[in-house]
Figure (cartoon, each protein chain N blue to C red):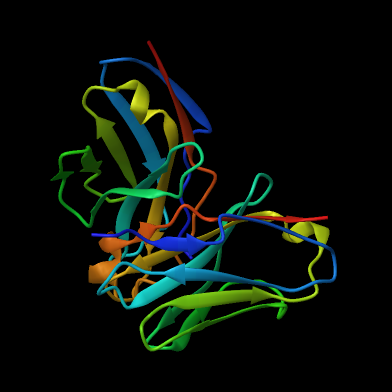
Length: 116
Length: 110
């Protein structure tokens, strides 16, 4: 079956712009989480969505937002980009958000965002 | 959130077993222990998970201490493809807040 698909793979934006990243989960997976990975901070949790509702949010400013559609596809948006937002943004899907289903956490290859 | 501590890096020779340790002294009774690994230029990949008993799958084995304050991921025969960053993660009561630490960078020498 197809894995988690993230688009685009690479993106270059200018400081102050906004960006939208897309994630298509594995078919049948209903939970989608987003992570930011930087060399300095490692992998940091952004937010998790299930049934179009944000279930949990990490410690990021309000410029970072997301949403999930009825087909479980998810988008994240970053407004007013800063140089420090340059990172690899990873999306992960699982069958559901509960502990017993967490082992099915499958990551995409990520979107590499560069802010100049 | 319960935290984990892992060595920054480890080295192994190809075709030898590798034991990757993880300390989680503040683990709660309902936390699961998960291991993921991240190969270069890829997203993290699920390796194994467990609660109290030792677990085996086609990729690795997970040995969990009796007091659950530590665990060890065992790769039975390391290959060059196993060179990656290995993350030990605890999940809380509701499977939320998947917190990744710095992980252990495993190098496999031919």
